[in-house]
Image 1 (cartoon, rainbow, N blue to C red):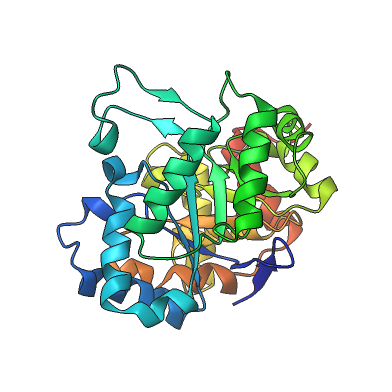
Image 2: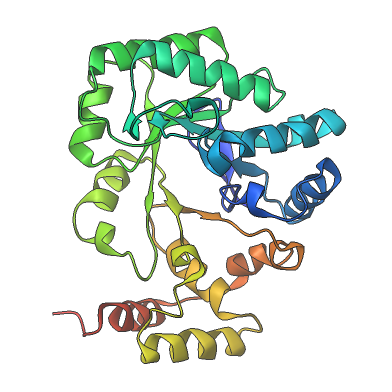
Length: 297
């Protein structure tokens, strides 16, 4: 599978395995998690996407248990994780309200917890999970720069930031912000016209796309014509509709990295089907037209 270079130090697989729901599986044993990772690796999917908040602050430790049981896996994967969301759960159960914290103390504490929980000595890519209205960009930028300099974090980026949020934080940093993980799919396509994708494409920064299948609800909320087109194209190319929907993102020249989340070993084994779907310009616009509900102007 193609690898996408985000920086001289960090390259990610074109498809990323998302561990948002890792703790929702009935089986969270190290052996079962290892089986998921091995299935990804067999397809060339080497990047695992985490966040401290996933699973109510439990998903990182579930991954860590698998890496402790099979330590050789760590050098075969890239770990992406995120911080700054504080929700009343897990280690933050005493919080009165859900909030964001981009202060240096919180970022450093989050990184130390992530390193410990995931049984690793470095995070390949750390993302600030959500824009913080109270962010002191000088403090946040200095904290991220220090983490990169320390080697605990190899590269840094953001998630759900708008272009002006990226510019603000980057203005106070030496290390580059190498990516932005945003929602992109056939049901969340505003980024292709509101400047989000164009901003990063102009800067040559690959984007990560969360919920490329709208959290699994893409078909249920889609126009009948979109559903029919996805099924038809999938059948024509010997795969299913989900591979076609992800291929729609892969077709874009911005070098989008879809983050694919599922607990089904059978579905994990088919994630790379999306890379084999051929999609010409008219097919891309056919799906886009149905997703919008009207033809382009």
